[in-house]
Amino acid sequence: MFSYCGAHKKFLPGGLGLTKRLVDLWKTAASQKTIFAYCGRINMLQTLSVSLLPALVIVAAMTDVTNYKIPNWLTGLTAALFFPMALWAGMPLAEFGWHLLAGVVLFFVGYGLFSLGLFGGGDAKLMAAAGLWFGTSHSLEFLILTVLAGGLLALSVGVWSLFNTYLEFRDVERLSQIFRRVRPNVPYGFALCIGAILAFPNTWWMSVG
Image (cartoon, rainbow, N blue to C red; front, side):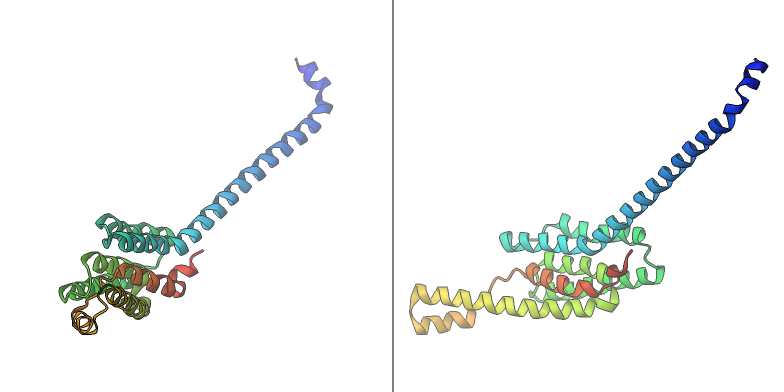
């Protein structure tokens, strides 16, 4: 046995060199796998950070346009997903607090609009859920763009309703009476969607990754 080892001693350096190279290759592959996994995690995080809220408000707008209702599960999901996304993205604690404050403030704003009959309940809840994503620094921009989009939408729906009424009655006096009573049924979820999409590119989420 010793003679066998001694006889093959000259082959050991080469064997050790091959083993070392195999170990190095294994370590390199493992490190590259880790890098790829890290890059994949970053890419997924960036993708979700910039697309998750817009996707959710688009779905909300579609349901509001088709059914004049935004389901509670959708507004709840929009609010709930903010928390794991903020944790995953490494949102600073102070920033997290400002985002929570924005959600609370917009909840009361939405409740006030709902109490006045200007907003539906689903619209108010969606506004508060979106406020979590915008934070205090961009909630005002979100609200202004939403109001502008909602005004244009209400005007368009009102004009369309009056035009259809005119085609139906063709009576100017009757039309004027209807005009004074008209209250267009506006899917404000669509306006919230437009406001959110236009304001979102300026938010903290665009700096993630």
